[in-house]
Image 1 (tube, helix red, strand yellow):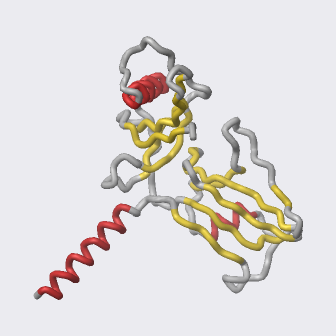
Image 2: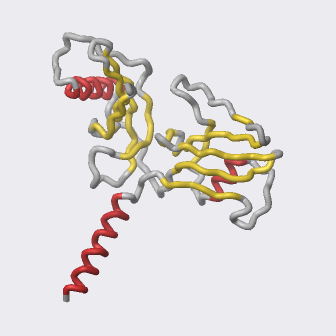
Image 3: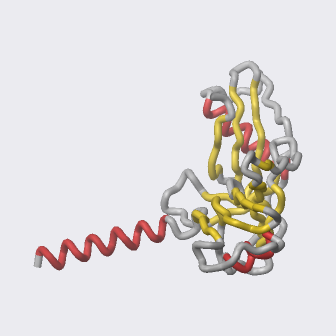
Length: 211
């Protein structure tokens, strides 16, 4: 009886872990040799699309920095060229996706990184950009325990629509369409990326940019 109970608990915990990880970013790693394929000269984004069995709604674009400039590709001393891509769904960037493609003599050799794969996501937006900005500022005020408007909160960039996980609720296993809001205060030495759910205004995540 105890053995059955233990197995049941173990299976239940396994289901819970799988549920929590249901829509998190997945790890990617492959080499052409590893998959019994010859090195090939291909369009790497098309190859990734096929390799990962993704629908046409998923695309890959060159990874950009915070100023929206394309990150330069790098060719190392061995002659390998390394390019970075980020993943999009229906034209919306999937936050923290990062695919590194490695090419030698014009042939795709390997790839690694983090990507998303899901069947469907409702990409409609309900709350406005202004509402998202105000919600993000209210959240930052709560972080510094000051809900007054007597000091300035600013933003370097206009809020960006992205796809991300809910990092504030472990029971929420779905991806969300969110506003990524840049908020900073010189007075309180704080700078945050705040992710605001585009449908209900819930705070999904925040990342400090000050180390």
